[in-house]
Length: 315
Length: 259
Image (cartoon, rainbow over all chains, first blue to last red; front, side):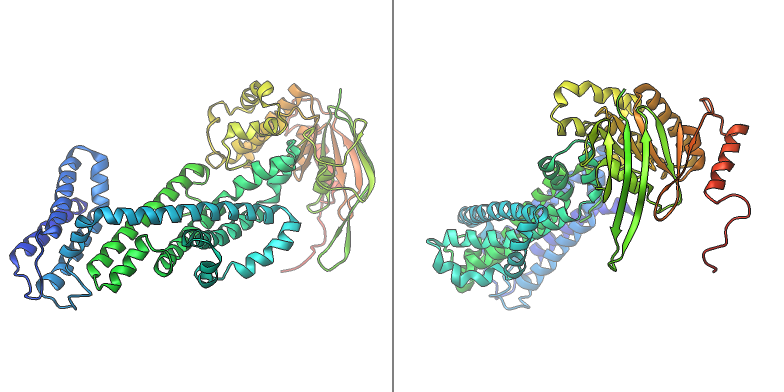
């Protein structure tokens, strides 16, 4: 049964290509210069065909293709159906549901402009995330270890934290000199709250016995904070960072759609106003890929730093 | 010879959640010689662990004083190493760095690095330097936690039911290891235990305590020459004597509750 999994992506890809070539286009479909969808299908199918051949020789490739086969086949099948519904039959409003040809066409033809947008978004996201995570981490440590800090900062965290960062937009946009700094602040705010809360809760949940053992081993207060409290709280800190990352994506998009005059969120909004829905979908694909990459990097970082608790927290 | 502990008129009270005060320890006077192996034995919840925590400096006595050699005890120190029933190894450090923790905390890691290797060998964990605590069995983890306490060369080693969580075979094996370490290091050892056999097998002296509030009921010198045979006549005689003192011998007590 598992053997078939290896074949699925190739079969599904070939089927999609055959149907795309053989079926007549709807009269409402304005043809492009190039069949971009066909190129994508061809590339994916060839990729899986090579994987299929390699899987005969290499065990690791075989396991991977067996695992991914069903899913990749299903994705190709979905694209196939989507292609037929839009390009061949035009069952959905053509303006809002462009054919895959057009969507991939945008990616191929406008990639340099899209790259500029992604870069500008990434700069904003990175700056905001780093500031928010750093301040959140420090806030969490202070609240976790000092009663004084907990007394003053906790109410602040609890009252200001749950307000969605985007709700501050009207105030923040007028109080900061540039839209870039304003958006940075909003993203930092969105990351700050979950990071601070999870860091402090992580520290407060460290078993007291660890501190007791370390004190009988000769550790002073500061050594305990940095070598016992913080390492023990790291799994919680990462949960905070993941939540913060998700909140920062939301804030980034909203900020770009409302104020900032560049970036991928702004691009989507702008294209929507121009009724260029193929570009909107292309933008969404880029966002999905970018955020997927960021989250994956965060996972890898966690796996690297927290080898000791592999399998304790599952995602 | 260093590592003498003196306990003078120590009293400890705890505040319960309903506001009542419970006396956990009252009027404890005890002197533990340097290099002696002493066991505290008594019913569970009788306050023997509390006494151990006072000696460690993790809690403060409400009355009376504790001394190590000439110094008063009022805070935890590496001079009094502590091993819990649960090994409490730091899960984020591998075994080597767990043992290195004390040396690093005291800032003498560079000079004393070789000790880590030595103590890991002493407890038979030569091949596990890079393992993480969750990869170790219960007995191995407890040995690692012993090495972690010993690497600081404590004057006194405090053992709070150190073998309580181990199976019977590992336990007997670990008892022999404790004895071997004690003979090699000449460290004063103070152990809390529930296990009468364990107390007799290991100790020079057994301190039997009464429950709530804990007082010293009897101090029993164990004069049986080592190595001790758990099945020998004098061993069993002492065992039944201690059980009698603990009120467990013969017909047994009236049950505290009926099902």
